[in-house]
Length: 191
Ligand code: AMP
Image (cartoon, rainbow, N blue to C red; front, top):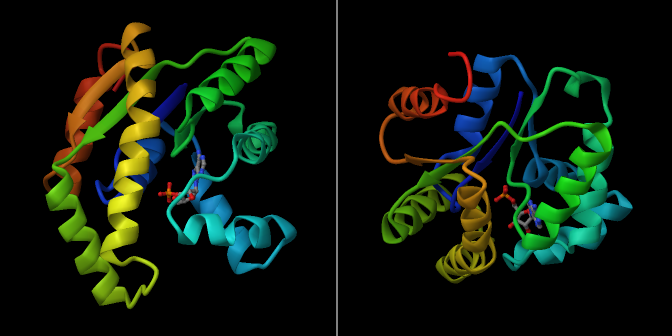
């Protein structure tokens, strides 16, 4: 089972990815988490991407495509995966298509979590204040929203054209949103 989950910053994508992946018994693979771990451990990759992430921009495709290809070659992905935060650009869609073509696999469905931008900005500011995350100021958060809309909206169109897109309202309680996702996936997958 191969799933993608997309959604603007603050919509609860990471939380839902964990729950949905556990539900279907596949690993949730988050490029953001992989990059953050590298930044924390100050690896060469981490040093390369730290500034890009802090300003809310995207890590270059070739760097991102390489870490995903590497991760999808690990044995725990044999029964499938849920990719959280990848692909995020048209170039990454093409890279993932090539990877899947090489392994004979195909994406089963693409979950798009939706939410009102102003509501999401408020939610992220609140979280930044609680967690003392100085990098999450309003300018950075708005920039991440813009980057998301500019780069990722075309991806939604691509997957909609392929008949894979499942749009789900991301606002609400965690369990409520999870149930919506499972229901939206039901036509493509066994519950
Ligand atoms: P996320 O936790 O998914 O919001 O990702 C946090 C940050 O990691 C993003 O703002 C980007 O700087 C970087 N990042 C994560 N996934 C990607 C991707 N697929 N392409 C480029 N940059 C990414």
